Structures are given as structure tokens and as C-alpha cells.
Image 1 (cartoon, each protein chain N blue to C red):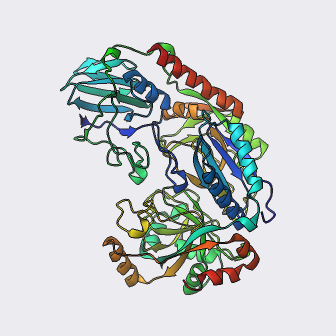
Image 2: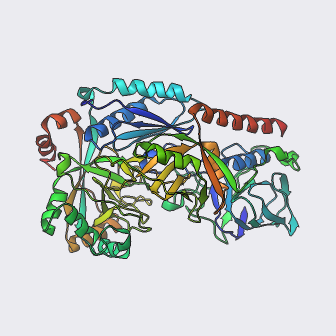
Image 3: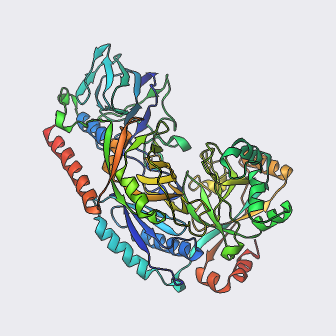
Length: 322
Length: 294
């Protein structure tokens, strides 16, 4: 069991996410930076889908009530085990009574604490991920609070031989303040003219403070819509007949604000959707801080699939190495 | 089906395929979306993760590590062609009565609180929707809004939110309303909203941009499983169901709410098989037939 002494800024239980419920309006949820989360599980010898803790900007403080094998990944928060610095991207043995304290990160947003065995909370609709808007899954459907006691499953096999293993620097994400985000174009972009499309692709966009697990908001240049909306959509130039949005959908809520839907995203709506960020780059978005900048790069489906294959190979190489 | 244009397919990143049946809202587009998504579910294609029927489109989420994007696209195109025969299309639907308190104080208060995000801040949402549709009399508006059954054409946004669209009306007969310029940050649960040509009932408190015209007395989301009729998925909304509003006054609204809270309220529900072909051929007459004993 792990006791929460201080829950940090925004800490939730997450796994690979919830599937097969989208038609009821239930989004996938799951780890926002899937790559960092998957490496955390890889390090401690967990199956890919074991639940871990996702922390945001400031991690908080935890006390271990048993000996555990743990790993920290994601945004490099200032971290201490019993007041001694503890490294990220490495397997550690912690003892009963040890205290783990995570202060703020200077780069990135989301950090992960993975524990051998994985967090033991009930499956809700097939997943342990927290979806806070409807209070589904995770620890009582909510973010953690001081005093919460989190149960850990017994590891599937002996994991102590892994202690001390770490991830080579080349496999650790860069957490930069400028990102290139790959987008497949399409969906309901027909209300935009060529000029608007060019403005979208040729401009820099800035992450706004109102960004979270539901949506990332960006400010940029004015993008003009010129076509009339179709019947049923309402009378605004940024409205279409409501559709089911892909996660990663790039929406214009008005001519000056762009949204990229995240893993807790609203599953449908009537804003113009001009494209979809590929799944690998959603990890990069989740790690981007307010005021950081990005550019959108149009890619084909083949390029999108290639990016996916490359990441899969990267994780497989790591798996072999460990 | 019903002379619909050719479906357009788009890739949404590496995990989604979006199929646009028509850009404008047409009830036959929704019938087709329901038919295709039903067929897709039946096929149980390995690698297909989520299948979502939407107003005039549908969305499929898949795992490209299991099925390739192009194979799935070919498969969808094939179903799109073969499932275009209206004679073979029918689906089981439930007609559900929604007791609603129109122009209630909670919706009115919410309109007032967020009035600056609305095109006409001096009007309540209810008054604004009346005006936009040229109604001068409140009772007449309520009668018109509650007079026709609505088809649930899509579920989404927040869990359990159902878009519903009036059956048996020509486009010019459909009530329509502009949405908020900038979404409200809060909407009380169970408020009934109108935006574009659609209605929704907000299942939980959350953001929203539709005009609030009343409040349903029955919950859309029942996480604790208190109500018999919501036990199956915890949500009332199901694509392809039909909702019929029944206006209630303040005292009946509170009476129903008390029964809901005690877990005793039973919704009025009728199950039947909806035939899009008969609907397209007979129109309003078909609606009269299936609503007769409701």
C-alpha cells in the first residue's frame, strides 16, 4: 500500500485507457504521455497495461507501506527518496516507511510513478483510468487527495534483479518548448478556404493556460472561414453538423482559437475539425507547457503509420536491452 | 440509400477513420449511419476498437497494429455499398417519454449568468429560441417543441449526452437556434438545450453552448444504478431511440424528482421495430401509427 501524504497539483491513476465505450460518449482517458508511461511499466517489469500514477507539474509526497520496486518517468521533477535525490528513468528498490517527494519540474508537464505489480483499483468499463468529468474509474473517480491509501498488486514475478537498470539517454524524450506536431488533414475542413489552410500550416501556435487532459488550447493568427455552414449546424461560420471527434482532432472554436482534443476529450461536437494529430504526437502535446510554441505539419496516413512503427520498434529495442 | 451522395472517408491520425455520409443534416443519413455501424458491430473485425454512429456520419477507431488502415478502409467501403438498401433496413428502438419543465427557473438563471456569451444578452435562452423561430406565445412554442418525437441521432460530447432531431418535419419546419459565441463553463444537469437543428439534455454539470429551454425531470446518467430503466449502461441515451417530451408543471416536476431520488420512478417506454423505409414512404402517417398507443 502507498499512502498519499501530499497529492501534488493533479495526480490520477491511469493505464492504457478505456476502449469500446466511445459510442456512449465515454472517452478513452489513459496516460497522457503514453511513451513515458509505457517505459515506466517496462522498467519495473509490468505488463503494458498496468495502472500507474500520472502527476502534473508538482508530484507531491508518498509513503510506501511495504517494500516495492518503482520507476519514475516523464517530466523530470525534482525528486527525493528520504531527502536524498532519486533519478528518473531508473529502477529503484524502496523500503517500507520510505518517503518519496516530488517537487516541480522545470521542463515538461506529466510524470509517471510505476510500481511493480501495478495499482489495484477496480476496472470500470474495462479500464483503471480516471475520467474525472464523469467520475469514472481510477481512485474513486477522482484525482488523489492527502490521506488516500493506494493498494498495489503483487508483481507477476520476482522483479528485484531489475534494480539499477536504466534507460539510455537517446530514448528519453526531449521536453522542448517548441514542438512539431504531425497532422493528417481532413474531416470537416471544407468550411475553410485555401488561405485559411495556409495560415494554419505556416504559423506558430502558442499553448494557452486553459489546457488540460480534456483539450489543449492554442492562440495564433486569425484564420478566416468563408463558406456557409450546412443545414442543421447553426449559423456560426465555425459550426458543422455535430460529428464524433477523433482524439487528437484539431478544432477551430472560432477564428482565433484552436483546440486539440486530448484523451479525456469531449467525444463529439459541431466545431470545424480540420485534421487529427497522430497518436505519437499526443504524448508531446501532453508534455508541452503553457506559452510553449508549436507548428503543425501535414502528413499522409503512410507517414503516420510509419511514425507508429518506429515508436513500437524503439520500445521493443528497450525491451530487449532490459 | 434514399439517393444519398457517395460517402467520403477521411483518415483521422493513425487510429481513426471518419466517414461523412452527408454534410447537411438529413434523417436518412442518420438511418444509414445506424445501419452501417450495426453491421460493423456484427462483423466483429479484429482491431476495431470503437464504432460511433453520429448525426450524418460515423467514426471508427482501430488499432493499426492489428488491422491496416487501408484494409479497414476497403472493408468500410464495401459495407457502405452493400448496406445501402432501405428495404432491408430496420432497427429496434425504444420510445421514451421525457417529462420536461419548460422555461424553468434553473435554466433561466443559467441563461442570465452567461448572457454575455449569447447573441442577444437581454433575452433569456427560452425567449431567444422563441424569437428565432417566430413564436410569440409561450404555450404555443411548448406545444410545438413537445408535439413531435425526436430521434437520437448521436450520443457523445460528455458521457450520456444525446443529440436528438425531430422526426416527420421538413427542414423549414424544424426549430433552430444559434449556439453561444463562446461556450458556457457550466450547465446544470438535466437542462434541455437547443443548438442548430438539434436538442440535447445535459447529463452532468459541464460546459455547453446550446440554448437552455427547460429541464428534464429524469436523469440521463445514473452511476449508482438506482433506477431500473438505466441499469444496463448507467446512461439513458442510446442511438436510434426515440424521445418524446411531455410538458409538466412545477409541482409534477418535483413529484417526479422525489420518485427518482427514492429510486422508484419508472420511465414510460415502448419497444418497437423502426422501419426507415416506411418512415420515408409514409412520413407523418407512420409517426402517428407508432405513437398511437404511447
